[in-house]
Each structure stands twice: as C-alpha cells, then as structure tokens.
Image (cartoon, rainbow, N blue to C red; front, side, top):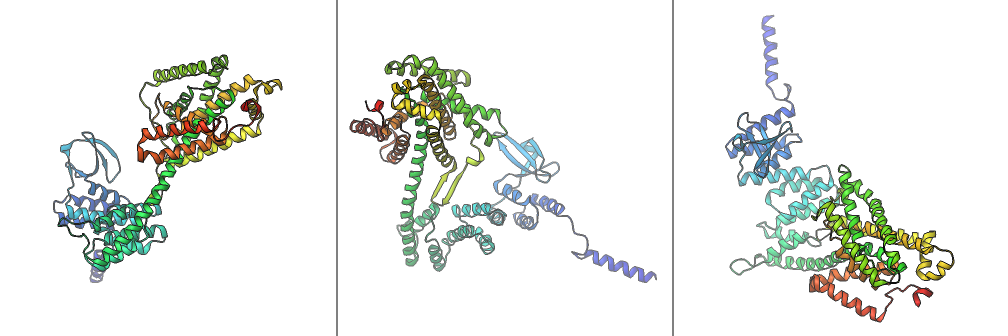
Length: 544
C-alpha cells in the first residue's frame, strides 16, 4: 500500500514538472519577470529578453519597446523598478512601467538608463513595426505603413510581409506594398530592384520621388548610383510620371489654399458689402469687428476649458452678438449723425477703430492670444502621398459658403431683407412707403458687424488673436467689395474667390508684397472700365 502511494506521488510530481500540465504563471507575472531581466549588461542577453517580451500578450509591451528605442526606459537603483522617464527642462519625470503610477520627478543619480546598441535598435524597430502593423484600427496600420515609406529599413521587411498577407483593407494593403517596394530598392538583387520599381509605378507619394531620385543620383566617383540599365530605365520612366502628377497635385493644392484664402476674405467682406451698399458708409472700424469676434472665441474657450470642440460652436453666435451689438452702438452713437459726409464718416470710424484696439490692449494686454483648435478641425485629409488638405481650412470654406447662403435667404425671404433691399435700391422711395430707414440702417450695420465677428471666429483657427488682427483684412475687404460690385453678394463671392486664388498663385512668382500691389493696380484699372464692379445693383437710386 505504501509502495502504491509513493508511486502515485512520484507520478504527480513528474506531471507537475512538465510545462503546460502545472498551472502556468499569469501573463502579468511573466511580463514583470521578463521585464526585470532587461537590466542585464549583456546586449546578446537583452536581445533574447526583448524577443521574449514581444512574445507576451500584454498591452504594455509596445510602450516598453518604444521607450527602450527612444532611450526613455530606466530602472531605479534602490529596488530595480522599471520606469518610463521623460526629460522636462533639467528634470526627469518618471512613470512606473508595471503599475502606470506617475511618480513625478526623480534624481538623476537614483536611476539608470537601459542602454541599447545599433543591433538592438534594428531589432526594436522591427518588433515595434510588427505591433503597429497588427493594430486593430485600419488608420493606425495605415500610419505605420506610411512611417515605413518615409524611413524604409530592412528590419521592416519581415513584419511587412506577414502584415500584407493578413491585411483585408485594400487601401492599407497598397500602402504596405509601397513600403515593401521602398525597402527592396536597396536590395542587392537587380531583379528585386526592378520588380520594386515597377510596383511603384502609379504610386503618388513624394517620398517615392525622393528615393527614386537618390537611386538615379550620381555617386561620389561621377558614376550613376544605379548600375543596372533595366532598373535605371524603369526608374527614370516612373520618376517622370511622378513629376507630372506632382505638378498636377501642386496646382490642386494651391487652388485649395487660394479658395480658403478667398473664403476668409468672403467672410470679412460680406458685412462690409452690406453696410457699404445700403448706407454708403466707408467703415474703417470693420476690421475691429473681426478682431472682436476672434477675442470672443478666445473668451468662450476660457469659459469652457473642458469642451474645446463645443466652445467653437458656441463662439459663432456669441461673436455675432458681440460684434453686432458694437455695430449697432457705433451706428446709433456716431454714424447716423454723419450720413452724406463720407470723409467725416471715414475719419470717425478710423478713430473708433483706434479706440477699440486700445480697449482690447487694456483688457487682454498687447500680447497675441492663441485659440485652441478642436480635435475635429486638427490634422489633414490625406488624399495620397502628394496631396493633403488641412481640415481647418476645409471647414472654413464650407462655413463661409454656409454663411453666404444663410444671408441670401435672410435677404430674400424675410421682411427685414425686403426692407433692406428697398433702402439699397431707392432710399427716398422706401422712406415714403413707410419703411423706417433709420432702423434699417442700424440693423444693417449690426448685421454686417455681426458677420465680421463670425469671420473673426474663422480667423482664430488660422492665426493668433491680437489687437491688430483685423487691420490685415480691411484693405482686401474693400477691394473685394469694389471689384465684385457694391452691395451685391454674388459679386462679393466672385471677387473674394478671384482675389484669393490669384494672390495665392502670384505670391510664389513675384512675392507676397508685389502680388498685393499688382492686384491693387488691376482692381484700380478694372474700376476705371466698370465703375460699378462686376455685378452692379439695379434700381433708380443706384443708377443715378
């Protein structure tokens, strides 16, 4: 009986020693034990530890590998606890790897960095690439492939091959294949280099252009960089096609930036077109209405620090109301006493602009203020490797068109719009029909100023907010109004887009200052031929 019990006990002990039979350690415990082995001084041992780490199913592994590659992985000398360390000025800020606890500042002598050599860096880049290429989100896999296109390296090839075989999204797979071809261009086999060049045919990416240019560049001895004639010929053909597409996409990108500049001009000039068309007032304080709208956006963000995205939406009506109220006060307090005296009106509004600038300087100081761009307006829409459109400018284009359409509906379908058009076309007749022209003037000036405030909201996403923000747009706004036709919204739209696009295409050729001078000369000559602009208003009063 004793012998039987001893035999059973021996069998149990033997089975417990076999891997997989005994209860395995938890993954977190294995991660901690493996991580602790990185403190070894042997680089060959570190390479084995890194491979063991990469084999673990722990979400903390990628961050550890990235910290190790970037030189941010340390351990504390007292207890050998592993730390992520960030350098801030002269201080070291530590976070515990295992717990994720923020430990704050640590002394330089109390910690030691885990060192790596070039071989380990290559190993780490390959493993990190493998993790990134296996990410659940397609956009993350796309970004990883794009990074490999920017910096192709041989260690990426193996994880790329595995990722391409498993990838189900066509666009992501094509980007991965491009990255693989970029790496194979450095192969010693001419056949692989030729296949890689052919695979790059039709790919639109500036990094592909760069590496093909380097492939064909002359070496230090005066000879060609690529020795194989077939590869060289194919690369020249592919590169010629890339240059053609690059010129097309550059034109599209310049056109986009021109339209976005025109959209900002449109927002700035719409209000001026209304007030100038209805009242005949040259409002030199119009730029300050734009400035007030931008500062309103800044204040709203200060009041809603935890809701930056929503604060921009709230800032639109807030800026309209603030700038509109200022406009009504200016019209009722100053301008209504100066109708029919254009020079005095110009001087009075110029004085008001100086007062508003000084008021802002007194409240907010003369320093520029930065308005945070919401996440949904940050970044760019990357159509391909040669063309990307920034979201903030794209949203501003759509926003300006929406404001224009909304204003057109107000003018066409509301009683106020009807009265405003009547006053614009024939003020004496409108007054004789019972329209309160003074009230229309005040509301029109407030509407124009409010729209200028909305323009300030848009501008706050493109530049810093400062006391002189509106001064840069007042002259351009007047040119848009005069060129398009005083008081005509369609003319303002065409004028703003035309001047914005022409200015964008002219700047690289003649410079920013000379481009504005040439545009001004063109507008002056155009007005000599068509004094009422592109689209003149119809009516007895305006035709007199």
